[in-house]
Image (cartoon, rainbow, N blue to C red; front, side):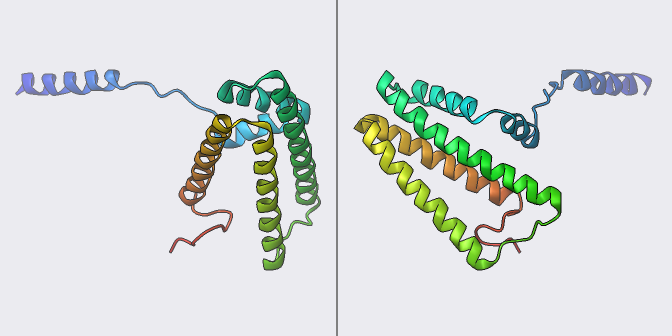
Amino acid sequence: MKRLIIIALALVSIQGFAQEERKERPNREERAQRMSNLTPEETANLRTKKMTLHLDLNEAQQKEVYAINLENATKRKEMMDTFKAKKESGNMEKPSEEQRLAMKNAKLDHQIAMKAKMKKILNEEQFDKWEKYQAKMTQKATGMKKRDGNKRGDGPKKQ
């Protein structure tokens, strides 16, 4: 009987040591906070370099893509600052249905314009690769919204 208990205790101990230690990854809020501290120029530079690696852009393409990324990063930074100011002042209120529709339309118009600009800059192979990446990121973002309990109110509600 003693041997059985000792063996069981030994197995439990070994199993505890055999478990792989999980490395702590920074959560999304921390990563978003670090990214929001970057200037628009730094953000545009990083995004352009990633696109250069992914799409094999030449020098002329890099300059044009950098200009687009800088414009987008500047607008995004302005919107974030406005949002933070509203949140801190306590004037934060949910947008109405009309405002929400207007924001979605503006977002889609921006995506259409972005696609047209990228089509002019990239060759056919690069554009196809870029479109696939955009679709993947959209799918990833919508998957996160669904998994997060639909916090933003987009899509069908969970019941």
